[in-house]
Image (cartoon, rainbow, N blue to C red):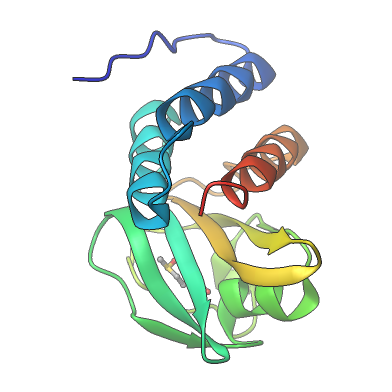
Amino acid sequence: MHSFQIAPTEKSALWRDLLAAVDAITAGEPDGVANMANAAALLFEYLPDVNWAGVYRLVDGELVLGPFQGKAACIRIAMGAGVCGTAAATLTTQLVEDVHAFPGHIACDAASRSELVVPLVRDGVLLGVVDLDSPQVARFDGVDAAGCEALAALLVMRI
Ligand code: SME
């Protein structure tokens, strides 16, 4: 059993502890699927007000569902489609305060109201995206974006 003490009230400290936990649990493990699965589990368990946390992988030019926690989700997303496809196509973090206002948003869980998607890029090559959903409007801010980008930078070295 893995147990992590992650309960800071300050958001940047929470991301720091999450990063340390993902680092610890993936260190020395060569299996990328196992590492994505544990990263998704830690994000889902410790980030408050998140109803979906996981990874889409770039496979043959489209995003394909990877390890995640939350409701069953759409399996394939074209480059440029939805929030995930936009992050992948532009290689930029997408911070969406209200998904209803995002043209082309793909609703996997009708409860989702805000979303943060960070591209997974290693040596300039897109590997996929990390996707976080929340049932709260404007759940994510710049601190979450920076924290998730740091986590993505670690994860690409472990997948
Ligand atoms: N909402 C995403 C699709 C993935 S689910 O949220 C898990 C999008 O618009 O790309």
